[in-house]
Length: 267
Image 1 (cartoon, rainbow, N blue to C red):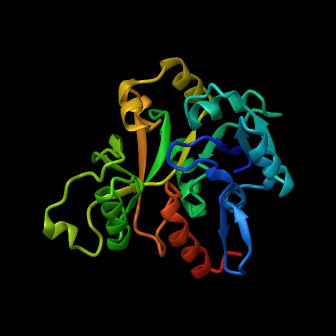
Image 2 (image 1 turned 135 degrees about the vertical axis):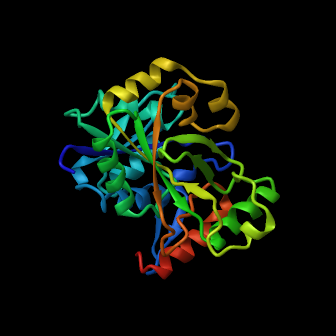
Image 3 (image 1 turned 180 degrees about the horizontal axis):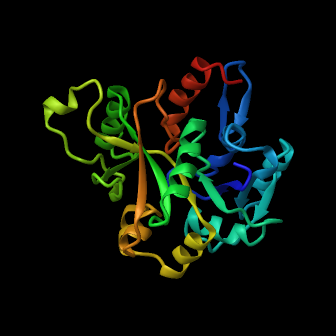
């Protein structure tokens, strides 16, 4: 992973959860750390600290990152999403890496082996612009997604893909629709999309050149720009892991994430 950099895009403004990167999360020792720090510590399980950068346009987030010893690259307020922020950030790094891992700042429970597998898959397939994970849902994860959807909240993003492991679609709705028999399985056939991507620098520049797509705008999912532009996205499927890799999308996600941090002994 020597030629890999992790960039964590973070913005202060959020329609669902303003100031989310600074939201405190209590771990196993009772210590509260802001979400952006927990995301940075998650990235530390993937690469060395000097290869991790938080890309933000907000000095409050930058100050918080510097306070715990992280590196910051300041980016424009005009970035439409985290992928555009990563694209801008790579030109400001001291050296351009061969592969960039975008670890979204609201995904502090991402397993390290997931990012490593994405990098490996990208190295092996020059036909895809990006690789991203699809985690088979345990029944508890599926129930969490469906419950949030029923309440009008977005609990996470799901993805469907073909036999060639190319993404067909990503949605904030729970897809595909399941009949009751499938929904009752221990591992329902729904795949949760975790907030992590691996790309080459040229793919990021191509992404920016495409401009915002209608699907991306409607769903609020940046990765749909690749699909709308006819660019292949590689999906790396994973079996369920030992914990629910919940993203912090809503204030109601704080308690279950804290419970997982405590159960896993994360300080």
